[in-house]
Length: 142
Image 1 (tube, one colour):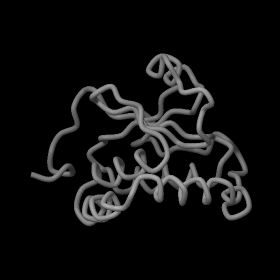
Image 2 (cartoon, rainbow, N blue to C red; image 1 turned 90 degrees about the horizontal axis):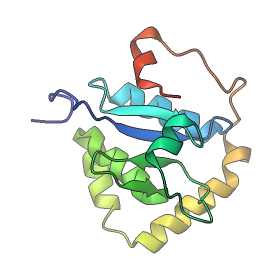
Image 3 (tube, helix red, strand yellow; image 1 turned 45 degrees about the vertical axis):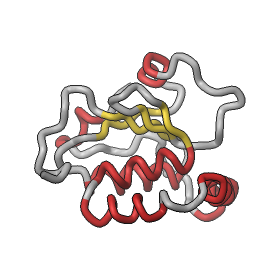
Image 4 (cartoon, one colour; image 1 turned 135 degrees about the vertical axis):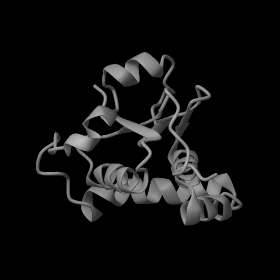
């Protein structure tokens, strides 16, 4: 049974994102469109949900989106992206699995390279609180 065929558990995984980052908003839109079963919830980095779930954030904090898994792990950088891809299932799981065969140092280096360029490559959203369709509102946490 694929992830999209299963019912999401009561404990969703949470993607934390930078509300001022166009690439982060793209990640949220990408994931929400491909996750109709609602496996993922979304919350801002540093918000109430983040502070409640990530009690010991790394220092220094990476310039990264983060994923809090149902196992209680907090993943950053390439580990977070690979986890989301695998969790989405189908061809995204295959992409995440194949990419995961590459050395983590290389993947994180690529992630950091894109993170440095993201503000030039991806325009920041015109509003940090875009209108969320009613069907998705329950998946956005404070």
